[in-house]
Each structure stands twice: as structure tokens, then as C-alpha cells.
Amino acid sequence: MGRSFIGHQHFKGRGALSNIAGRFESQTREQTDDGWYRDEVPESIDETVLPDRAKSVITSNDSPDVGFDISINPYRGCSHACVYCFARPTHAYLGLSPGLDFETKLFYKADAVRLLEAELSKPRYVCKPVALGINTDGYQPLEKRLEVTRGILAVLTRCRHPVTIVTKSALILRDIDLLADLARDRLVSVMLSITSLTNDIKRTLEPRTAAPQARLRVVGELAAAGVPVGVMVAPVIPAITDHEMEDILAASRAAGATCASYTLLRLPHEVKILFREWLAAHYPDRAAHVMSLINQTRGGKDYDSTFGVRMRGTGPYAELLRTRFELAARKLGFESASGRHDLATDLFRPPAPESPQLSFGF
View 1 (cartoon, one colour):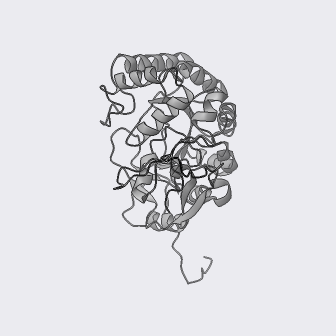
View 2 (view 1 turned 60 degrees about the vertical axis):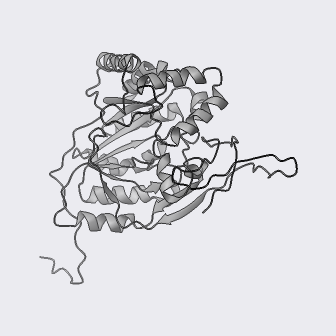
């Protein structure tokens, strides 16, 4: 599945402006003009959707600063097209570009339900809250048709397994029946990620996500249904969205959010290149200033992956963000400023094993 676009081009509904080579590629391609022939630039890029024949669906994590030990990612790639997405570099492992390929060449866990039931049935399985849809959004547009996330959520509901969800999509309301069921036993926590309340910023920064006001409505409807819901101000982008932190927290609290968190923009691997391209195209007047502030929080670099500081950064500017967040969260009365709701783990029951014998009905 090779890359089909070379050069730089803004496509409607897409976040990346190029299909940069992944860091594992031994060869790169560049667009050149020799005066003789030019490739036709497509007006749009079609999506390709293929099954991901995974051997398991539960992934263990030992990173000390992410707040969960296990996760399930129903999809690889994400058509939400957020240009800043920290998961973009994972497409390089597939021989694909973290750029436009990440948004248009998508994979889904075809056997997710069967694999999950098998893993939950193992005698040594230890129940811990599972983070659903962390690497890419489990409620991206593809989910409306394939319902992989709903299938997984149905298994977790049946097994009374605790689950946490982070999303930018209003599609999560489709599953409010399952979420409300889990909420009655303190088995679910949902976080809405809100980067900006400004539609113009959203359109270029995260093109196919729900509008800011739609996300606030999701917060309200989940809260009304008794589902613990919070807000992640994420990512905070210096000189682009940082001034909105207090407004996002206030609007989310008014809608019904009870906990809150934030993360500073992260630019691992190829993301730094894609983000710089995006800045040059959409904010040329302040691109240098934005990167200067980012560098100040990352020890002079575009990114520092050190555990404990990668989510919030270091230095005076990062400290100012932390102080602003903590002050606003305290004034607004958020129950938790850690971005977490406490969930129960003692109600878990493994999936019932299939048996060829009929029950006697005793």
C-alpha cells in the first residue's frame, strides 16, 4: 500500500499537508519540476480501509505518566485528521506515512470481540480499568459503519469490566445505553478532549472532529445520563489555543464535567515536521513565535520524551500553564484535576465459556 501523493497540498477535511516518509524508510521521494512534465495533483484523497489481523486486542503499558496499565485500540490510523496527533508516528511501523496516509489508510480490528473474550477468559487475567481508544479515537467516523468500538464496549459491559474513554466525537452518544449501564456500577469514565472553542481553529487543526459546541453537548448529555464525564484541554498549543484554557474549563464545568486535565502539545518523531508545515500554511505570521515557546518548554528542542515531563513540559512558560490550570480548576469546583474518576474492579466476571452441552435448567 504505497504512498500516492508527493509534495505539499491542502486537501479539504485533511490535517496534514504532505505524505512525509516515515523514519524507517531507506528511500525518500520529493516533488520536483524539471520543466517537462508535472504530475496531476488530485483534488481529494480516498480512504482505504483494511482489516487488521491482530493476535490480541489488549495492550499492556508500563509508562508511568499515562494513567492506565492496559488499553484497547479498535483502529490504526484516524480520519479525524488532527495534525498534532501523537499517534501519527505509529503508521511508520506499517511502512506508511505518518502524514496523509495516517488519515486515509485505516485499519480495524476485525476479530476484536472474539479476541477480547478470549483474553478476558484467561485464568490469570487481572481486572484493571482498560483505556478504550487511546492511540486513535475509537469513535472516529469509521466507527459509525463498522461498530468495532461498540462491540468491544458490549463485551466489557457484559463482563462488568471498568473502562475509560477519551474522544473528540459526538458518536459516543450512540452508546449511551451501554455507558449508563456501566455507570450504575461505577465502571466507566469518559473524557471529552477539547482543544479550542473556536470553529475556525478546529477546522484546520482537527478537521473531522465534532465541533466544540457539539462536544460540550456530549458532556451535558452524558452527565444527564449519570455517566461520569470530564474534559481534557488537549493539547494546549502556545500562542494558538493557550489563551482558551480557562474558557474551555468553564464551559465544560457548566455543561456537567466533574474532572479535568490538560496536556501540552507533543511533537514526537515525524509530528514535528507535519506541525511545522501546518504552522507555515495557517499561521505564517506567528510560526516562529509558536515554535520558540514550544522549545522553551522542551529544553530547547521541539520535543522531550522524558517520562514525567513530556505531558506538561518544563520551564517558566510550562509552569505558568500549570498554575493557570490548577487555579481555574479549583475556582470552578472540579472534583478532580487529575483527569480521572475512580472505578470499581471487584464486579468483573469472565465471559461465560461456550459449551456444547445443554443446560438442565436447575
